Amino acid sequence: MGLINTVIDDADAYRRALQTPRTVFMLFVSPQCPACGAAKPLFSKVASRYRRQAALYVLDTSQTPRHPEVTGTPTLLILKNGRLVEKLKGFGPWETQEQTLKKTFERHTRGVPTKRARPR
Image 1 (cartoon, one colour):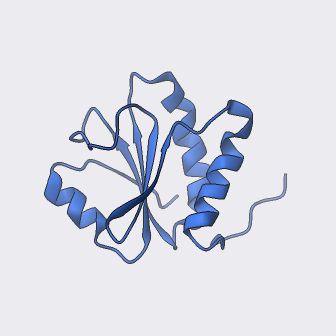
Image 2 (cartoon, rainbow, N blue to C red; image 1 turned 60 degrees about the vertical axis):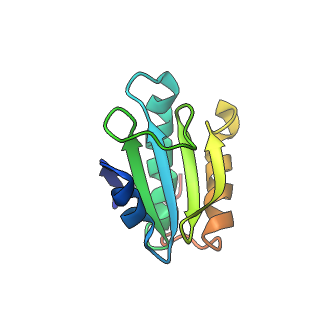
Image 3 (cartoon, one colour; image 1 turned 120 degrees about the horizontal axis):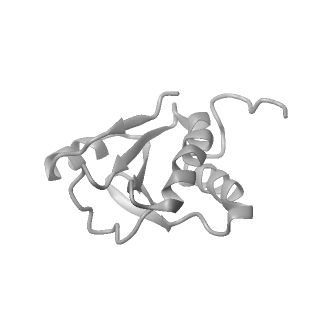
């Protein structure tokens, strides 16, 4: 799917991940978090449409050093030019989570997905 499921080992690794002209989306999840079980596949579904315009990371907090902006999971950090521009702690009510994520990606990637959604 093109998403990066990775481990960031230290502050230098965070800096390297942010050295891109693209918007960076970092989803922090935890194996102990019930909400993360739904957040990760939903993020993957929505994010896959924007993989050319954005750098996409799914980070397991049990394997990645603590990020100062992440105080709970799931948390999505959106960064541009190495600076935090938006933080979502959770994706809101279940009924609107997908729409919330789509709007967030559109806001930060100029609203143009890389491929069309499949008809349902």
